[in-house]
Length: 288
Ligand SMILES: [Zn+2]
Image (cartoon, helix red, strand yellow):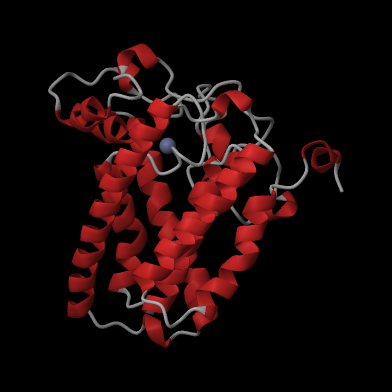
């Protein structure tokens, strides 16, 4: 056990949920995929929220009532967008026949996880180069705290295009629906655990799985440490030179908050990418 582990301990909810995932993904085939993913989401939120009270990473990152109102509203909106996107993908899938589902399940799971995270990595990194995509993505970076409540807070367009680049290739290549459902459950766990306000690390697993210790750096206001664009896997950051590690960030959020709508003004954030104003260098994320 390293000194780091002794000082901070394990990220128990993340490791617990990852160990439960194969059991739940394979053990409840009778449930419709939507119900399985929804149940998994509720379980993940409950486990991580309990851990945030038990072992918070930072006491001042607990969500306020205003945060919860904003996050709850955005979550409901994004759930609607997600459902519509899945219906569109299902229609597309009916028109394409491909052989990927003939591959062994384990190969589909590994290949699908790599492919899904590659598309998301590329678009996420591009979004941080500034311009219109950053104005969409900045909504996710505006909070000055990370916790399970704001883990899924993002502009609906951000949720839509991330879903398309993440799952679209798998649908077009004909991956098995059960595999895509299991990978969606894995992505939910990774997204929630990466933003969790819980102390602890995942040890050597950090070289193969995304984690809170890496993703907090992505949200840093210090551009030198704000890499780690892959949420599910660190592989593409390692391959393309954007992997960052080290102690936690001093502050999270956007580099110059005064240039953005206030964090709780959800309506202004939703409209912001569509307002006509020149893009300037200060629109850019610190991690370009
Ligand atoms: Zn980002």
